[in-house]
Amino acid sequence: MKRILLLFIVFLSFGILVACSSDDEGGENDQAADVEVNKEGYPIVDEKITLSMIAPGSGLAEWEDMPFLQEYSDRTNVYFNYNTPPVNDFQTNLNLAFASGDIEDVIFGAGSDNLTPAMEVDYGAQGILLPLEDLIDEYAPNFKKLLEERPDIEKSITAVDGHIYSLPMVSVEYSSSWKTGPLWYNGEWLDALNVEELPKTTDEFYDLLVRFRDEDPNGNGKADEIPLLDIQMDSSRPWLLAAFGIKEWGIEENDGKVRYAPIQPEYKEYLQYMNKLYEEKLLDPETFSQSSEQKKAKGQNNRIGVFPDWFSFFTTGDSQEEAMNDPMFHPITNDPGSEPVVPIKSGVTRGAFSLSSDNPNPEAAMRWVDYFYSQEGWEELNKGPEGYTWEWDEEKETKLPLDPPEGFESSEEYRATITPDYAITTPTLRAPKQYEEISDFDQFLTEETNNKIKPFGEVPYPLVYFTNDEQKEINTIEVDLKSYVEQMEAKFITGVKPMSDWDEYVETIEKMNVERYVELYQKAYDRWADSAE
Image (cartoon, rainbow, N blue to C red):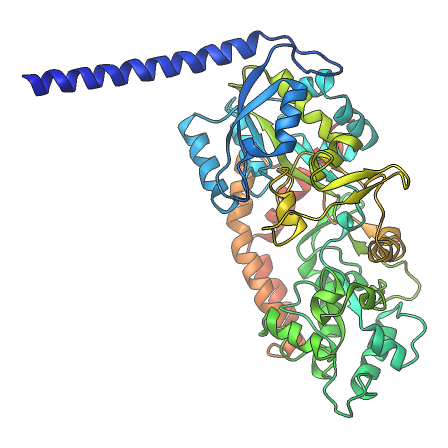
């Protein structure tokens, strides 16, 4: 009887604790719901409120210990209980939270890979995610101004039901337009061959590759030069496809008309050109088999003439100063009379900030995040408060970087303990920083981008939303379609499949329901084009 009585007391106590906990949480939410939001200035709320947030964590520091979040909470009076599972486990945890119906008030930094457009549509329709457009209008002047200046952003974040369920990360930094890492020329080889002007056509590019192969530009007396190198064509493909008027290796839009590029005559011309380069040893024979380590070994041995990478020194092993002698690939065209084209990104990444419908004070949350869409807010979120990663120099009127404390391997590792803006998709307007000295290398990259990408850039296909039924149908068609096109590209380029099999290749794709695939993308594009007008 004593044991039974003891167990009864334990369970009763546990029940009381749970009830108290629930009451406390309910009381906290009720309190937050009752607090009025100031539309201007700080604090955002006169009375402290606490919300919950789920976000991907780097594992380098707990978010409640980060100086930026601490100082910003003190300034705004908006505090958070943070749930920050590791980046690699974040999607699983987010899915579990949605499935349980116990999703946090704020979803921060998820990005479209974790909070996918399909999830936005689905959970928005279920009423789990809160529509944001009215909150933007009333409590987000910085973001509202951005939408007025960039109508394409509003189109790209508006779901099929007309609602906005997540705020994006928007970048206007020099590399934000890069579709992938650029192609780079080996500047040392150009100097050795006295090349003063980069190729502008496919014929000129071919001629230069031949010179790289035959004229010993690395000066070692061996015929070991590799004129053009890539891994699976994944990085150089966008730049070389564009020479034939193709912006995307799949669905692309031209003047409002959507098409599937890998069955177009221009794609056949691209395959024929690449097969010619492969057969003449101008394209690395190991393109479809080598690893990134093998690629870098060739670059560090000065054996490559043209190669893709985010920065050239990643491949060559040179210093940044030496890398400024490696010019960025100038877009080329198969038709000397036509203007070249370069595929670019919009600089918009969706899924950066969402609110659950259980959020007791979405107005305060919207005002809290809107600061990061200002120049000052983005810079503070990125670098943290003064005194940690930077200090102000009155004489130079600029921000000077500070060395990290002992125990940190790099300044970036230390920065990740100061602010959450580290390797995640934060809701920000990322622009070149004010009052910060730009390095010679960054200046070089900015000028190369402004001269060789921006004047010719086109977004292949905008960010759109599909209905759930459309997305399911697309997924069904897409898996086999992509696999087949990928296999056949390698076979055509290497000559395993002769170009005489082109018609058979196209017929096979047509049997994979590609017409319906294009129709669904056209429908989504038309919705996008007609929205926000």
